[in-house]
Image (tube, rainbow, N blue to C red; front, side):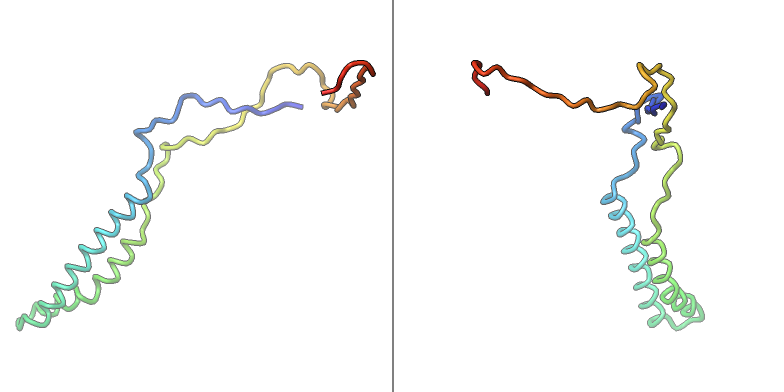
Length: 117
């Protein structure tokens, strides 16, 4: 029965490792806070400004929360090639026997005059 072994071509580089989960969440939270800050400014300007572009600020105050939530929930996709999958290959090493391994019962005999232990 052939066995499989993993033969990596080269070691995984640390510099190609993905960003940590905490760092990614921190970055997404900063983008969320920045977007919601702009939304707050738009809301205040929609109330204060009396010209026609108050409607642009009002639209920004309404649309930006949706954009902020979608952006904060967007997780960065995994880049192909960063982590290589180990693909098993058939080991062509000749086997000593073609039969499956059999457990041989073993018995240990002790002489009566020797101490056990």
